[in-house]
Length: 226
DNA sequence: ATCTCGATAGTCT
DNA sequence: GACTATCGAGATC
Image (cartoon, rainbow, N blue to C red; front, side, top):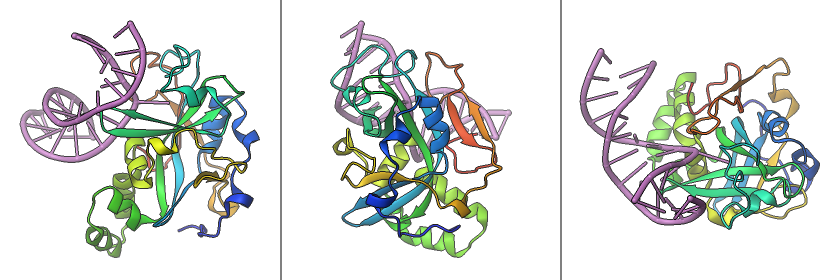
């Protein structure tokens, strides 16, 4: 799809730590269209980041608001590390730590557009591969979007599709790390430089519900909700 | 399209 | 003991 291949190499293409050593809102905005990649034993899984949210330690909605605990320790570590948490008794959610060390800031990755590894994703999501094949054979754009959202349209769904669990918590996702979970800049030709970014209230929170720190690209259908 | 609700377990008061 | 940065099913309009 649109100019992406599977030729990205972590040692060459992973985002440098400096990308994440900025304020959470700036990182949340610039992560849009970047590629989230998980190199698993079964193969590469890749998606285009389409929805993010910023959380900071002076923000009542943030896990880091009340200081460092065992659960949120990764948020107070180096930028570019993963903060994976478990919630509602069944879902994992992936954040990338941002800002200076110990700032307690991070960006939640809420949705991606599936780019590579759709079969792996569907298997992990417990969906029938034949169903995927049937739907993609009948290739209306709508169908692709619908399936994309079923696979990866939400923070819990994308972690399940990507096989991200507690074991990825605190992994270094930057070029300096050697883990299998990382983020790359998109191929230039696959990005519309004119595209506008929308800020809206974050999903599923009660504290600070009015702060517009959820970011999406105008017209991008691969979001968890409208 | 929009809603309400139940599942399910870790985290913090 | 209450709450949760969610999801999917089922009801209702």
